[in-house]
Image (cartoon, rainbow, N blue to C red; front, top):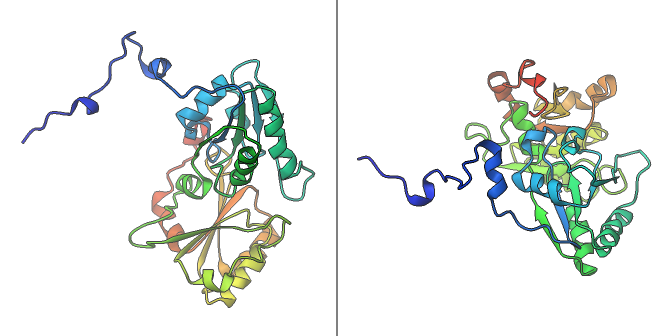
Length: 288
């Protein structure tokens, strides 16, 4: 039986006859008010993976406070004349403190500016967005959270690694490979994590991968469990290295894989032989 699409499902026709991206110009996007801070995720790297609200914010803000993991190609799309402030934090390198960054957002907002806090990935996935929004809330600064595609999901997709697959895993654990001090997180119960999920996805874990691998094996994880290291996910210079848990530390010591990187422990990477779609010819397109 043939069904007629509902009115809401039918293609909307703009009154001005615009087509393509120009159709978005007539949409009622949220107003970016003066004195507000928008904490926005720019996605894992490729500019094409940002959201419409992210692009809208870049066209309407007065200042962008951006992280080290934001692809410079994304900043090309900021409205001309917008202030750009770098507030990147990279392990082992001089960088502003988190407190300094949070209160810089407060100060800019209280000057009456529309402040875009632009972060790689998603603001709330190991992006310190929770800490920054807490400070804004305490200081009485209104804010909006715009989620982004996190590299632990979207970046893996560019490597042909599904975070979940019915034939591999019905659960996945996300964790960070270092704490605020830059050391291997002592607060993680590695004994429990080791066998709690078939797949573990780790952010910022390359530096301590040898220690982490040892802790996981001591917790019962098998040494021959596959390990994939996805560097510069979704970018033209993306690299994927394969090893196993027992050899992960030695591999990092010998090969020094590029960072930022996502580390995947478990058989999710088994699908890469079939699903590795991001071919060299496709990487010529900077949008993604």
